[in-house]
Length: 95
Image 1 (tube, one colour):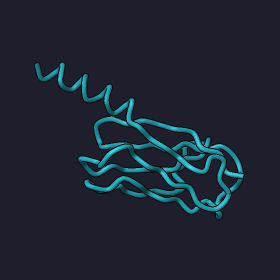
Image 2: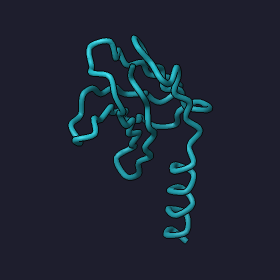
Image 3: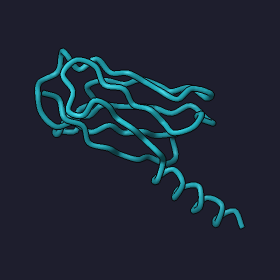
Image 4: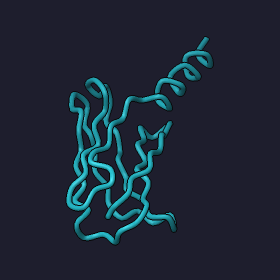
């Protein structure tokens, strides 16, 4: 039973409602999670080489995090959202 619960939770986490706007962005991006977050989530912005260029946390009870992208180079980046056990990744463009 526990294994099934974990698989169900992993599917829910992978299919997490995530909105990133604006995309592409020039100054600031917002990462919004659909519904209140039930546990702390780590949010990382990663370049194409795999280096973390910024990180934030969305605490339980919150829904949004912001990244200042005015100091990073234009290009493609990934936003990794993790709870420590599972992760989901989205792509964002900086212009």
